[in-house]
Image (cartoon, rainbow, N blue to C red):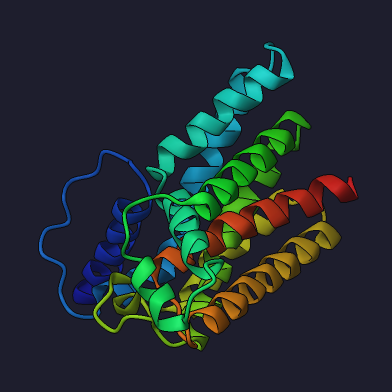
Length: 246
């Protein structure tokens, strides 16, 4: 029992250390299978991210909406360390390039930002800024962040890895039932069962659509950068659906 608790605690710690910038103690050497177990607690990081952004939006509510949205967006980028945003930019440069699938996989490792990545990054920031400026219910931000990270486990488990040695490959085949359990309480923040069902459906649909498109462009597999793009697009999709339906 004690060993199980240590395993669960370490997996949650690793997920928070990996996906957020919380000042947590270093997790130490990561052993085989630990990244896969940690993926079950990705939604836990979503609570931290969504809660931080929602708090920033509430604190800046007396400022002009555009300014408050910009500061909340800065909080969004800060608490994630721009991890998913970086993935979106890198993945966009690769999947939209007019190259062969093999060459696109190679582009994923290129640290330089091209036109496709720049366009995708700017569009993502504009969408989030606009949605935050629309004064969404604070709970919706948490729902978007949590559901996006829970939905990520579907493509992580269903699609092969683009690079077998990558961190993304080591995170596959994780504890998806744990992710569902951890994400479930966020449904209470959606404002109703219809909104919760809508958010969950949009999250899963967006994650699978992005994964399928990227896998087709990369020769069948996806990796860490694509996972980041999935989170970014899914967050925007869920928040957009909730704001549009309000």
